[in-house]
Amino acid sequence: MLYKGQVLRTKDGRIIGNAIIFDIVVESVLLEETYKVKTDFGNIVALTERLIRDAFYVDSPIIIYEPNVQLDNQIKLLGKFTEVYYGNKTP
Image (cartoon, rainbow, N blue to C red; front, side, top):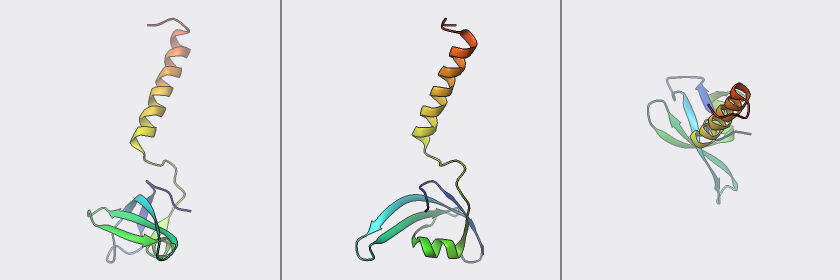
């Protein structure tokens, strides 16, 4: 399974560069997921999972880049830090 925000490392830079998955669409004609991929050069390509696995090294995502989720997590972590550091008192 591939994820939005997943980084794709190219197997052959002469064919396509490194990329990131930025959208997932279910193709009505093929009835399979199509992944919109943006390369490091700025090109946007729609590929199936099989084509992605042929052209890229697909690693398990460590961090899925979603700015709003990251910001929410950072705010929660800051709140926990503040609570632990200051106790229930406000600084």
